[in-house]
Length: 126
Image (cartoon, rainbow, N blue to C red):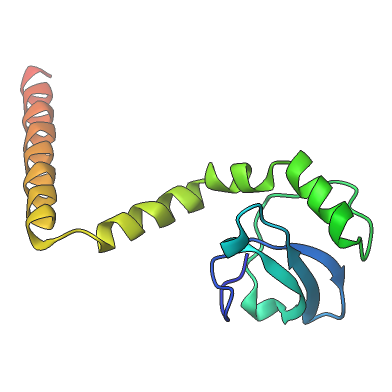
């Protein structure tokens, strides 16, 4: 996944390792807006995930990579990961209006009160 640069936040597969600081990447996403063309990128601009496409040949072609990408369901695996869910949660929080942020604050306050009340009751019984 790209961490910096024009393709920030997009998924890509490492097709080949160029040297100890650069890799060749391509992201054959089914969504055209998320597609990443084949390019070299420094490892400092890339964040590695635990998703692996097994037995991916070196310098695999575009069609071969796309077939394996879809057969391994890389995008689905990533969307179900904890990182993607927390990223979506943060994006949702950024879009909240002032009143919606207030409602979230009130709900969190109520939940905290209920937790403290139940903890106090359990300490009182013990």
